[in-house]
Image (cartoon, rainbow, N blue to C red; front, side, top):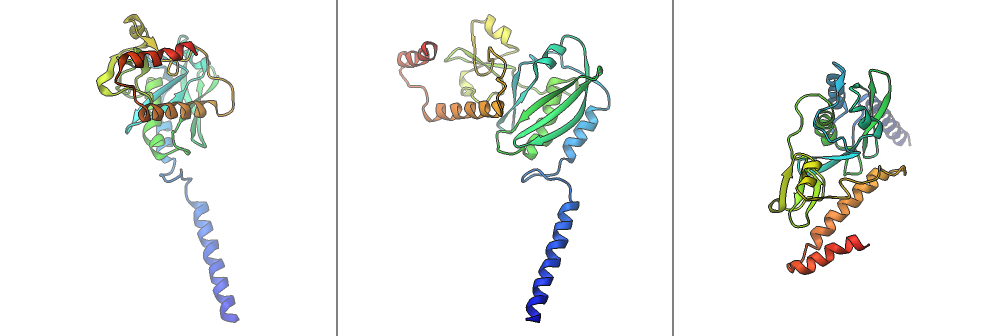
Length: 244
């Protein structure tokens, strides 16, 4: 019995020590490194007040492709309006929740806004913190070199113009690149209603992650049921979306 008590007590001591070690360790994102890299990016950004990037279309929802995966980021309407006023920004704080990195920025006039960066996985990954976060900052603000990718890609088969890094682009052989949505429309192409929604995002809980999940489901559906070889039949199917 004494031996059993000693073994039990030893295990309790081991568990307590292990718990204390976990408490002292830095916060860790599921399966990835700590937030140190994201905090370094934040500190670098805050070395000076940053202007908004000239040439960005400042859409409510935009995408960046990293390692073959499309990551979406949401800009509040107020920030889009500030693109015309010359406001400058710094990052006040960053915080993760579920699969979203929330970036709170503050203007030189002390106004506060939030940019939301979405991970297609169920939790914020190390890729989002290490690579996507600085790319979004470089895309939106005058911070480092802007990401190099076509802003708008037209599907030559459907005639729809998509955001250049959305998650439902056609095959490479069906793509034509444009600098922006205006030039794509001027060439006679229609804007994709998912990439360029006519209405602002709905104020529902988890609306943006749900929308991204729906877009991914649509992309997978298109891969499972590709366009038919008969172009006349395919055109008839495409026209159904305009009827309904």
